[in-house]
Image 1: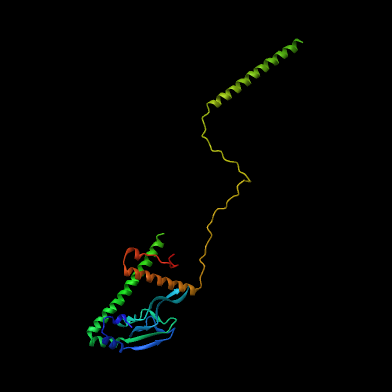
Image 2: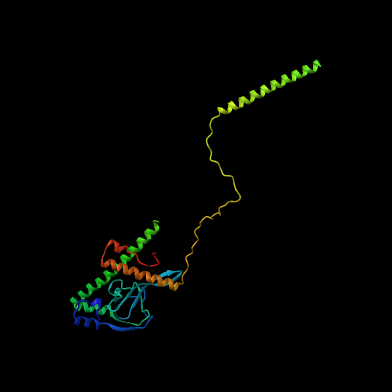
Amino acid sequence: MAYELLNGLSSVEIEQVLELGTRLILPSGTSLFRLGDPADRLFLTERGRIRLTLPMQVRGREEDIFVEESSPGQTVGWSALIPPYRFTLTATVPLLDAEVIALPREALRAYFAANPAAGYKIALNLAVVIGHRLQLFQTMWLREMQRTVEVRSV
Amino acid sequence: MEMLLMGLCMSVFGLGIAVLAFGAATRSESSDSAVQPQLPLVKAVAPARFFSNRVPVPPTVPPVVRPQQVPIEVLLLQIENHVRLEQAAAESFIAFPTHAQLHSKTTSPFVN
């Protein structure tokens, strides 16, 4: 399994990082975390998919609206490494069971302090993940804004 | 007899004066009409008719189309489909950032 967060690390470093975590098997329908929860663990998706949602009012009801989906190898819950350490999305397991590796923030920080070279690579990989999310959503935001402007100028 | 002839002559004379007066009056009316100013032409208006050969066409009023409310499950699926399509379009833009890619159209029912 190639994890985007561990890209560029040696096999030994990857093993060391994975040993910090706990493997979790999540049945379909499980909530991994909810919006606003304290974020003290970061997750690497091992199997299945993790569905990320945000609440929205639809016909007077609050519904969890699909935002994005995490596939095997991808990272979920990087709010665990970014202040204020609160999840900004809700993560659930859709139709099929999933498996993730939960990496505690404190264990990761201790590892980074002891292995700065590996910590530097992981920090760069995290920047790529966050940067991609930023680019993706600023593009989606602009497309929606463009449509809003077009509707309002008719 | 003389009196009768006298009366007859007077009657004929009176009748002649009346004819002359009538002729003069008639002649002056026709000359007045010759100097009347020309009135502007007015388009003739067709008289109102109760019946017509043509069948009247009712004015075309666009029918009021009320958006059919889909079940909420379908709506949520449409929203998810829209988000997925928008993400795919955004991914295409990030891979090849051009103006055309940024504003490319999708098949989402929310924008069509």
